[in-house]
Amino acid sequence: MRLSIYRHALRIILVILTIHSTPTTAETNEKLILAQQKAKLVETLINAPAIRAAQDSRNTEVIALIAQSRQLLAQAGSAIALAKADEAIEQLDEALRNLSKASSQLTGDKLGAGGALKKQFDEHAQQIESYRRTLQDMTNTPQTAAAARQLIVRLDGMTAEARKLFDNGQQDEANKRMAASYKLAVEEISRLRNGQEVIMRLQFASPREEFDYEQKRFYSNEILVGMMIREERASGESRKQVDAYLQGANAIKADASNRASTGDYASAVKEMEKANLQLNRALQMMGVPVF
View 1: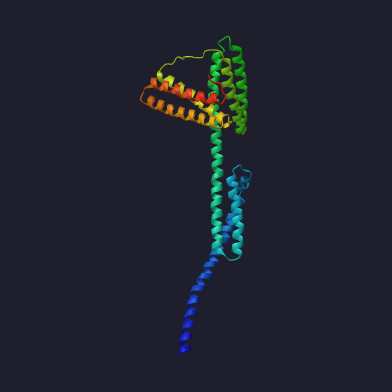
View 2 (view 1 turned 90 degrees about the vertical axis):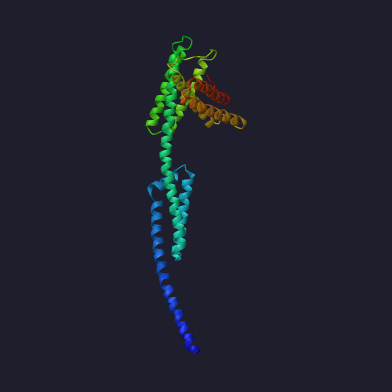
């Protein structure tokens, strides 16, 4: 009787094991096939031209992501060989996430860098043109006429060379030339005016026009402050003071813009003059002559 019960229980256990073991094996096989397919996908992506070219990229994060993906692919291959499907899939999924992130960064770097370089070039060109007009006015004064004409020729030559470089795809070098032209214009105009009392009151058709002029002057000074900061002209406490002047200038400018939005251009102009004074102080701290 006991033997019969034992045999019956054994048959039940065997049936249970059979029921559970069969789908488990099939599921494992399916997962292994999935892992193998993902491994081929990861390998294809890693060997894609864009990803391979990224090895020469300056983006260290992208390079690290690709290296991690290669390592994960190798680990997944070992896991597949040992029939550890879940482990392999987890590693391959992480590799795919890394490659997706790397690809997005590469696209963003390409688009962002190109747009930023073009914007920087155009900003320099606009400001140099404004100083060129100032030099043109200075050719009407006997004391500065000859030097102003010579400086115009130099600036025209430098900007033409910079534009040629930009059109040939050498954007970084082009912007360096434009920055050099900009600094030359600022410093030489200041030198030419040295000793003269330059409290020029320009004639404007309306307060709104004068406000626009002050905003352009602010924009010009702001670009120059940024250039000097990137050149590390100020450090330590000096840098903190420069940052404070810059922050104060932007706060005053925001107030001026609010006043202008209500039509109070007269007081907005006065505020913009204060904002420009803050930027001038920042430039002076970094050794740049202002006028």
